[in-house]
Image: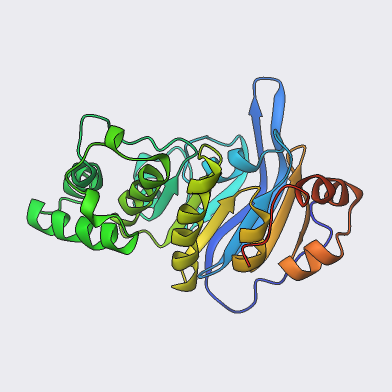
Length: 261
């Protein structure tokens, strides 16, 4: 069984629909018959132990990893081997990684304008204006002329978020965006993500930051061994986890992470 507490998608428009998703790396099965529906504006936090398949799941959503079985439909476009479909989905789905993946030879501003100019054919003037707007939004506009090596880890991650937003995505995916940061830099990145959530951005965030999950998520999904073991509202998930694996996981992580308050 794929989830102990499935939630209704309701009447809101569907942003992502995943059915029967399975993924292998050689002989290792990373995802096992995953079903998941995400509605527009929904904020989902995916958690679970290392190797549970959570990062693989969101990497499949924009075809960074191809799946072998099942269907993924993003805003009405099914992800297949068709490059036009892949490009359409990627242009509408922003992703922020553990490592910031900024181009070291480009300034902060150039990192943010590269894709809009080359992929979306924006003029440099328009791309610059958009980039500055989003750099202001993540409270880092003054760093625009600097290079990534001149920034702290938290600043680089906020640049990575601004860069993704410059493509005007309707969905944002976050793959453990704070795991490579020093503890004092985590809050500034989480605050930026919290602002996005409040603005109604559709978000799927893979993280162990349980305080963030409690403060932001509409739904918490717990994965283990390539399966969705449990999903529920944050209140129900944290106060009354249904599976033994969820209880064990929470016992380990709640001693290490504090609520954002």
